[in-house]
Image (cartoon, rainbow, N blue to C red):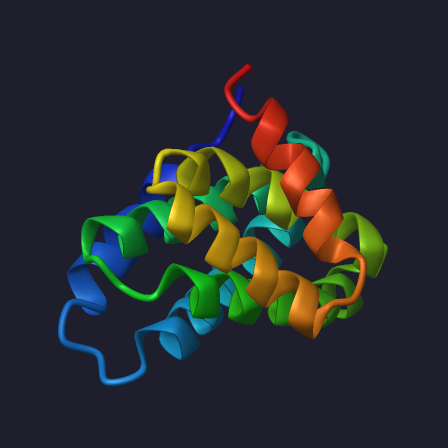
Length: 142
């Protein structure tokens, strides 16, 4: 059985962040709460990779619907992964990779300028991660 944390995350973002002053920061809080709670409660039934990836995909999907700042959101989501990893006993590097795996299919649907802006923002904050994200973008939905 797979739990649909992508749909839950998207619904929360769309319903709560429409008029949020700092939507990316609030999106980070949403992904943190969902990922930690979901991984902790479903670890025995669902791979944490699936859970983290789906939560990030849902948040990015919701932010896309609301036409919010995707580069800033991507950086905030990745920044949350160290905390998520610490609180769930997962590897921080794994959590970052899973988060980017979740974000890539959503960002791939965006205009090429947005794709590059997200990649550049990730690279600026997390040296080396921009290239990982570029590779994930190329294979997303393939």
